[in-house]
View 1 (cartoon, rainbow, N blue to C red):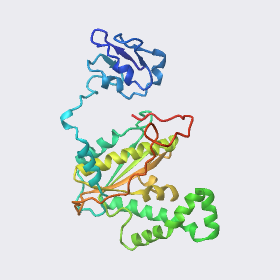
View 2: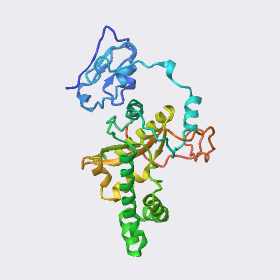
View 3: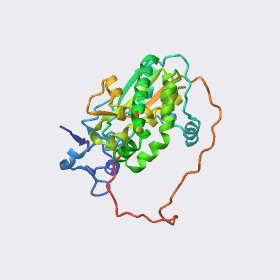
Length: 314
């Protein structure tokens, strides 16, 4: 049973825990008074750790975070904005890899960054499947090729295109129809010995979750993917988002999921191929300007909504 307690002798009564709690479980009725715990709301705690992280005196005890599970931030390690932006600017998709395996401890560092990605209601739903070795990754590529072939086949025929509009929706089917010739070409290249699907990579990480949460699970997984790509870059690895892997699994009868023994209740929501890159980029090209709509005191647009329920990401 979840327990939260506050040591009245240690508490500085600054109310920081009450301000930080996203569920209002901790409340401070008046300034400089001991915060109170709303026992009736304890069941709504999603174990985000905000209260124990914000308390400067360590007055809060939370049964989900026993001693040793809350670590002080090392401020000297925190990068500046310019350093973070340089990492983001310089990160590029890498498609050529050295014939060298990625060490397990390096992979674990990537996963450490991935698991700390925010997730809706702090559910931390993303699970990871690490596929090591070019042969195993190549087999995923072969299953991807089969899935893509099965997906684009209907677009060759009028009746097939009609069916796919019902399955995907008009806009989705129209988008895939435009890409169908390119995707079919990638399959032909793979079958002829040129792997542009998983790029002969020595490592593939699949980001999976129970499918019960729908798009919520996909958002969580792809937030973890982004963390992983930046961590990989910082570790001297190259990575590339392998989007065809998920698509091929969805339309290929779940062959990839079966190959990696994924539970039937689970789904693949993200995939990264990874390895030590053969090419090093020393420049980064400009991208399109951000398309921004400003809403507020300095903007001209006004919100067109009466409010909606949003996920709380921690």
